[in-house]
Amino acid sequence: DILLNEELSLRENRRIKAALRMARLPIIKTLDGYDFSFQPSLDRNRILALASLDFINRAEVVHLLGPPGTGKSHIATALAVEAVKAGKSVYFIPLADLIAALAKAEREGTLRERIRFLCRSSLLVVDEIGYLPVTPGGGNLFFQLVNARYEKGAMILTSNRGFAEWGDVFGDPVVATALLDRLLHHAVVIQIEGSSYRMRQHADLLPEHARAASSINPPPLPKRRGRPPAKEKLDLHHG
Image (cartoon, rainbow, N blue to C red; front, side, top):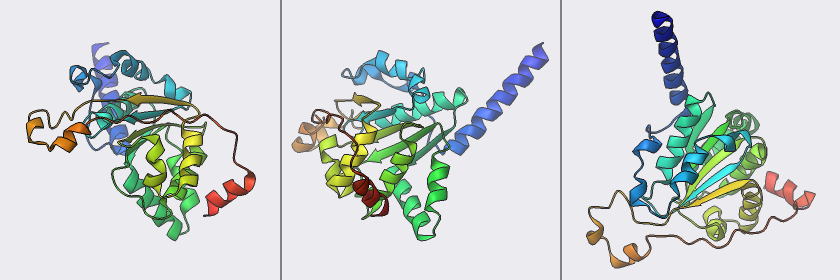
């Protein structure tokens, strides 16, 4: 029994390591390693409830919003690790890299295959929305992926920008509205308000305006509206 248990444990560890590599996580993080005391605005129990992974089974979208350094990527990565341990397939990618990959696939005529590949994972984590400008046409490509995963696969999105700013982020208010229409339909929104953990020992060195902008207060979530007409969806797909 001892030898059998050791063999099973070894195989499970190998499976987890292989799955973590396939998930392309930049670094391994855990919820135990997150300092909840540094971000009192964050409901610890709410995050731990997400670790049950029910949101994956319901194909929901988790939005993690907040200023840089508040632990959005840490939580997203930790939830991805929990999903891998539970046997879920995971794929992690920053938005800029995702759009670059989709744009390359479009140029090579393999966009449909690339989107199909990105829809295979039970959980898709898209990191750093709003940190870098989206290239022209990138919002349309991201919409096609979101539309393909809508109500079929769970996502975690991290962003330092409020939803009202997504028109500027993606360079197209129409595409941003269509994105939010799907991404907020079955969604969990986690707002983190606080200072940067990375800069905790150097806060006095930050300019005053940077300290004043240490939190984001996004506007109220838009109400779910009906589907856009067929022509609008067609334009979004082929824009």
